[in-house]
Length: 174
Image (tube, rainbow, N blue to C red; front, side, top):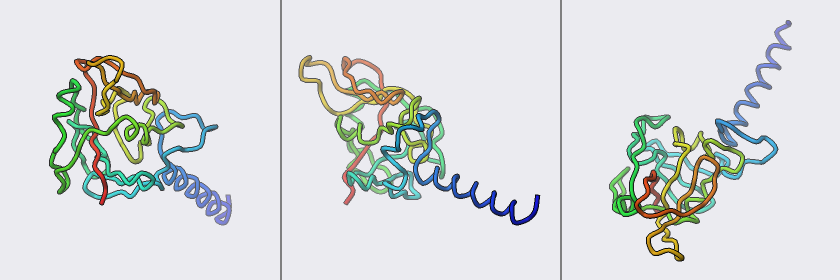
């Protein structure tokens, strides 16, 4: 293979690799669906946080219980009842103490429709469990139920507050 052809193939490969990272990263994906939360919609910070430019919300990149390690999240995401999840409000992280459990609509804003198992942009939120995450929104029909988002498939459902689910915190980005 001549040098010009090798260089051209290399540049094409870099283009597609760079484009994939710019758009997002899925463990499993349906390529017929465009990215709903492309990486270009986020401002990434070195401290383990990102701002979703579409909503203006700042998110922790790791789930509670995990630790940010520069490019990934290590450790095991903790599980909480709904009341325990809400007790995470006011957590001090990355120089801010106004972190809180997101409401149902805020949490669904980071679901990546193209991805499943987990249904989140893995380039932005690495090592996210493909599991249930509490929202702060109570379920009106039953007084002891609350809404959650299933990051296995992106579905939104409700469950009893004594159920065990993960938590990712958010804050208003100023």
